[in-house]
Length: 96
Image (tube, rainbow, N blue to C red; front, side, top):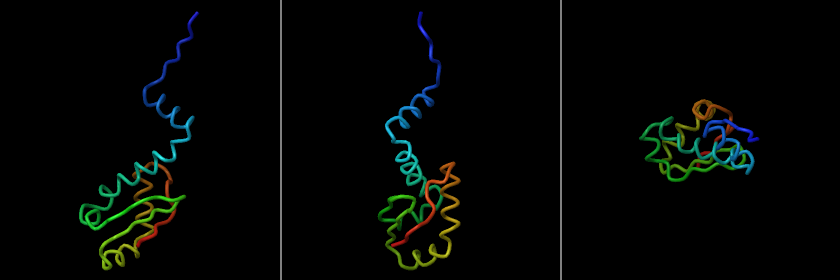
């Protein structure tokens, strides 16, 4: 008669995101949203713009000194952000 398809709401939403090819965009938005959690409030306050293009994270900072300091830790930042996301969302950072 009726076939029951049992799945959680999360599974249904994940399936819908994949169907409409929005899963990558959600991963990017979640990674951007985690910027303050991963980097801390001080860095977040000096971040004026953040976006992802391809697999590159672009960050605009209003402090040259902070930009210089973060430039030495790009690989570590990539690793921390990807760990927070639970998968590799980005593979490089561009500081401006």
